[in-house]
Image (cartoon, rainbow, N blue to C red; front, side, top):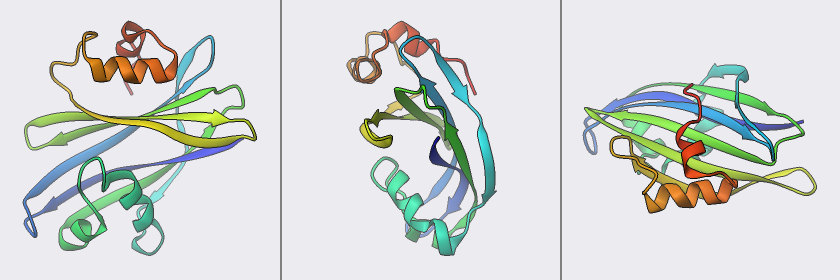
Length: 158
């Protein structure tokens, strides 16, 4: 079985810029015939010694937050590990973000390559409000997953 990691965290900082953000992950496993929520098999407290590179990889490009920001502020994080079933064809990692009064969503699409390797193929950050099936960026996400946009919007909440 394959595994995937995600991070749940809260960060508040004033230096070098004002940040007040909460991030929660949700993982969906997509097969040719169905999709389902994947629950974490384990979680642990975020470790500055072990997990900074994972944090930077996940959020420096999408949220423009890095390990330097968490070192300067108030930070609490957890690392979730997910066991991906063999039947999975795609994985959709969704990060629900609350930044002040604004809400956003990061979608990350992964494909399971032959040889059982997980490879990220698409990433997109969208505002939570106003997402509709007419959104070109949402259609791109659905296309990567082989889903209809309406089915993507109907994914069960975590």
